Amino acid sequence: MTTTPQHPVPEAEALFNPAFGAYLLASSVHAAAKKTQSPLPWPSAFLVLPLVLPEDTRRSLPSKSTVTLMAWAHANPRHQAAFAERAAALTDYTRASLRTALRHQAIGTSPQGLTSPRPPKPSSQAPGEEVAECARAAVLVGRWLATTDPARAFTVLGVRP
Image 1 (cartoon, rainbow, N blue to C red):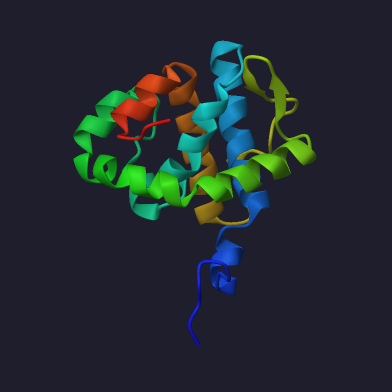
Image 2 (cartoon, rainbow, N blue to C red):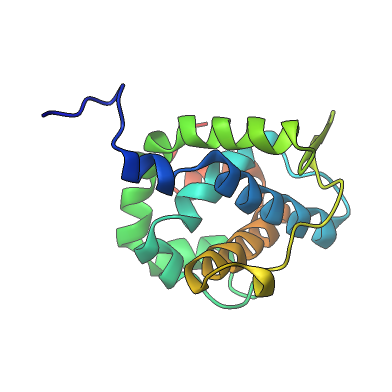
């Protein structure tokens, strides 16, 4: 039996559950809003999941946001080179996750971008270590994106918005 892109395998559906993506996006948006007291620009949301979900990329992220996105990208050319393809592959999943987050009011909107109506559950309450790692990475990425112009972030990561 062959599987086509229109009919994903059940494992992929479980891994790419929009509710999980919504949690990660909410964690990122909340961290960004907390850092700058302003919304996260819409385009930046499409950078979060491709940085957080792939295990190799997630594990290469620094533990603190004192390292900038630009410094991390230049120190990790392999991840930077693969990012555009990963971002494209995760676009539909990001959209589905955004819709889920908006529907459940985990993320709000304003004319300036995405807002955080309430804090998401902290990573310490995650149901497993991998989920906690993803949540911690989403917080870091949110802090990065809060202080990085979206066009610059896309350019550094090799993606055209």
